[in-house]
Image 1 (spheres, helix red, strand yellow):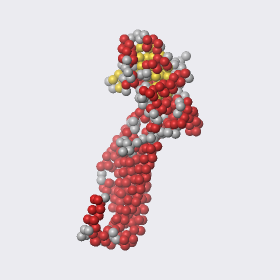
Image 2 (cartoon, chains in turn yellow, purple):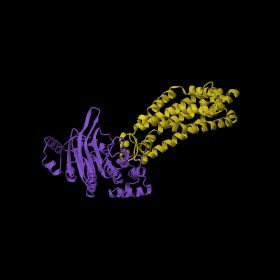
Image 3 (cartoon, chains in turn green, yellow):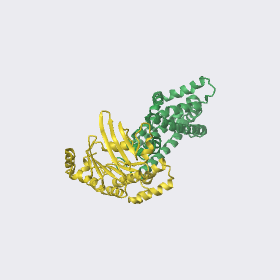
Length: 254
Length: 253
């Protein structure tokens, strides 16, 4: 509190504060830019909602391919390893560029040319690689004796995976998954480099024409409006899950 | 008449470590066979092999006279006809007690959920757990969890029940309630193979006792003769050691 208060006083009394106040905290600029920033943010929301679903499905699929030890899956497994290595290894902004400008340049009919779709695809590629590793860690953290118990009950391997292993794995990886999702929600702004007027882009356009940066803060606030409540909701879900199962924090309540 | 379970020359190795060296065993209908022996003697591996959780290297396992270790044979229907209870219970922590009990019959056998739950609740009631049906396993004591695990294995009406040191992970005061359940099963005529460190219990419940050492059945016979007049020096040494051990469950892990 003391530190924050001191910091606030330092900022508010700084020589540049009046100028900063008018360029970053202008009520007027906020009002006039907000509609376009908000409609840009709506595009962000739509994008990450769709991308998140794709990422979840694709990530789990890749994780399963990499963990299920079936000889027949060997070539696919190698492909999955290469995919994850490459997609995780390339900077996301580069991936957005490459897909966003590379795919249309191929001039193949049938391929999408919309920057929103291409940018979204690039993000889905990058994040499915990250998320597959999260899922893989979760699957591997379930003790093999759980699988043995499933098989001993007469479940098939697929049923054991579906009803015994995956539900436990998913519960364990909710916090890191949420982490990746928050990162994704912010990285949607990268699609702006391909042109679509999402929140960051809209704010940027306004700032550039009016020499006022307030819209950027408005955009930042909009992002927080989504990420913080989401975090709290998941926290609460997890706490309830732990309570219900009679578990406790590793170090106890105090 | 065929035995329910029959093993002929079963061998199993993990890498260069030979765990089972030619096991022959017959378990008749309504019979209880106890497997005794030190930790690492192969008792658990033998049970896992019978339930086809491990592939055997050589030999045959027959269930109701039909070989089930034929290459390429689907192990799933065989596992459905056997029940296996683990030392560490291995209940599913994300499912309630009743869902743990019915998941096998609902998913594997396609029994309607309502019907399965009804049977599950009856089974739990039989083991004194009727009021725990909706709770999660972590809330239960070890003894209660193991009784749930036994109920889970029994609900599919298996031809034989395989019990893998089911009391070894329990606090001493909880051992009794689980042994009581097994006593009841024996009285009902359940065919069982029981790997155990509870010598008194083996003596009481088993029709036949097999002493394993280094993957071989060194000696077998009715409990009276094994425990009072063991023929082999290895058996005598083992019994002398374990019976003077203050806490036999600490011998094995």
